Length: 344
Ligand code: SF4
Image 1 (tube, protein in one colour):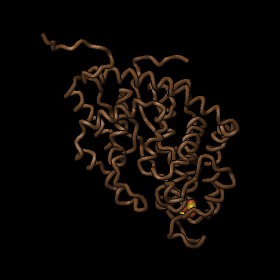
Image 2 (cartoon, protein in one colour):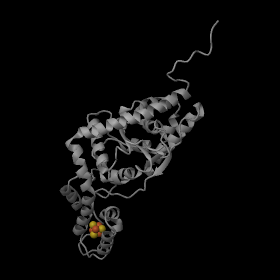
Image 3 (cartoon, rainbow, N blue to C red):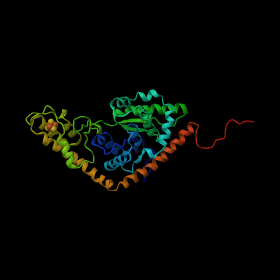
Image 4 (cartoon, rainbow, N blue to C red):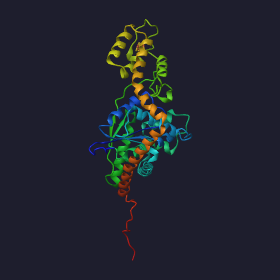
């Protein structure tokens, strides 16, 4: 395994272990990560502690879900020879840094994070008035800073998390001296990926197409997918720009198919059933090789676990080094130092 050259900037990103990943996770993050591996020194982390910030009452699935995420990552092309792939909770330095940073982070900074306010309003079935939930942006900041992450790929809705990380890094450096770089946001181009009901694809809406869905399931989900509501009869012309299936074509189909859909839909030359089958073809073509690679890990989950463990070792080394710098900057190194004031 060749260590990455020092000239490459360090990237840090993670995903919560919510189980099998769907196309929205792929298009919104994973595909982008795969492409970053040759350009950056990448650290990709299954952030299992983050799962506890909302799902603290039932933790029985966290470990299993973490493995499922790892299967999908590896199947989609994250390469342990190129990137450090690991579990957050196996690197205790995240927690130590979280605690230290919590001492210097004003409450108001956490309360004004937009996703904190949104989720608190939207998630009604759980009590999110917890210390852990308020502090989750700080845990995220610790995840990044403990590796001195320089670049953080995020969607637009997550940009505020990087901003608060930059503010916390600045505040720490101001108090104790320069330890942390201020990480840069790398915005992931946001493709509009609708779920089968036309809303944003999301596990919480139950409208996903999973990376691991077998071909018949993908085809069935496409069959029931909503279309342009104005196209009621086969003879009605439609508009692919307002149709969720049209959006899928724009992301996954070839130029030729997109042109065929555009012309055929607007002139009522094609039916929605045919159009959906073309979208399903494109998805199956994308998913087949991913599922082929996934099989190896499903049949032998230990392989994925070992990869996570090896990644954790590498992550731990980098994080421990940062903590040496952090403690030294704060005058709290673990080394013996003779007292400066002596008595007679
Ligand atoms: S033909 Fe295709 S793009 Fe047009 S409304 Fe039907 S499914 Fe949508």
